[in-house]
Image (cartoon, rainbow, N blue to C red):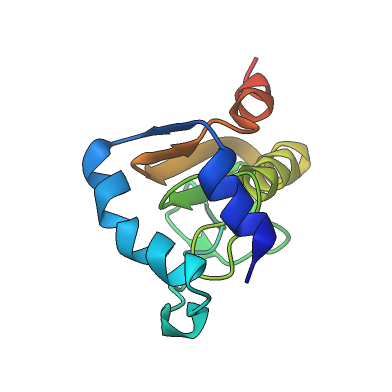
Length: 130
């Protein structure tokens, strides 16, 4: 059993759409019953950059100066990365810092498709924007 994940799910304060919470009941049951092999790993979209000419680059080093970093945030938010789904707020924060400090990147767009998640570490992530 993944005790770290189970603990985070059961002990964390959540701010999530009720329908998303209900939909994830099956996943919680699978995790609690230690049947994680049943979970399908969803491929997460990668960070990329787009130049002012519309060219797309897989990494910031290849991007031309003045490009925009696109950072996808998909799925439920938790503090740490999950093997069966979304990256955690820690990784999202690292990606934002990397884009912010890269000389080829002038702006950052967060492409968010999330119903919410645990409240853990969201304050740290939010402070990156102040």
